[in-house]
Amino acid sequence: MAEKDSGALDFEQALKELEGLVERLEQGELTLEESLKSFERGIELTRQCQQALQAAEQKVEILTSKDGDTRVEPFPTEPESD
Image 1 (cartoon, one colour):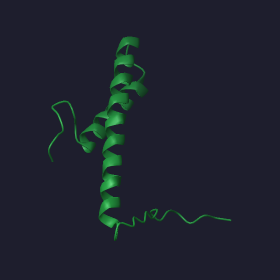
Image 2 (spheres, rainbow, N blue to C red):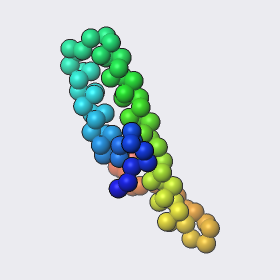
Image 3 (cartoon, rainbow, N blue to C red):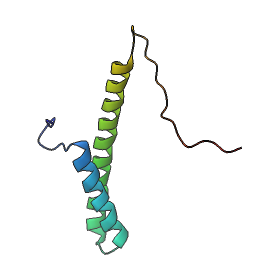
């Protein structure tokens, strides 16, 4: 899969890096400066992931549209209990 620019990661790479940052932050052993840098990077990665998910959602909508009529159906979830 081609990357948009040299700084962009694909979704899986960004998510993996984000998970690693969260683990490091949760350990509480980083300095304040390191924590802030990690937090900033985490925000960047989160935005990249959100954009990738939005793009994927748009592609799914386009692929599932019929005669220009897009029907978005939610994925089945756990049954609601009354």
